[in-house]
Length: 112
Image 1 (tube, helix red, strand yellow):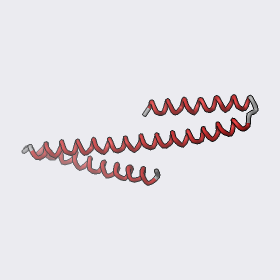
Image 2 (tube, helix red, strand yellow):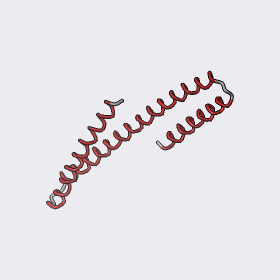
Image 3 (spheres, one colour):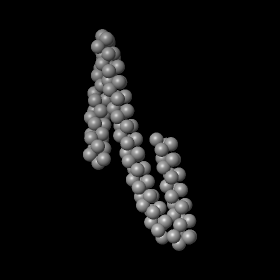
Image 4 (cartoon, helix red, strand yellow):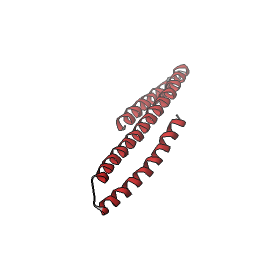
C-alpha cells in the first residue's frame, strides 16, 4: 500500500509542477486541462486507497477465521480444563472482533 501512496503522490506532484509551469506561461486552456486531469487523478487515488483498505479488512477477517479454526481444533483435542477455558475465552474475543470487522467491511461497501 505504501508503494501505491508514493506512486500516487509523485503523479499528483507532477501535475502540480505542470500546473505551475502553465501558470507561468499564462496558458489558461492548459491550466484547465491540468486541473481536470489532477481532479481525475485524485479521484482514482481515493478509489485505490479504498480498495486497499477493504482488502486489508478482508485479510484480517480471514486471519481471524484461521485462528478460530486452530483454536477449535485445540479445544476439541484437549482434556485440560485450564487450557480449554483459555481457548474458549480467546474464541469469544475473536468472535467479537470478527463482528466489529464485519461491520467495518459493510460500512466500507456502503460508502463505496
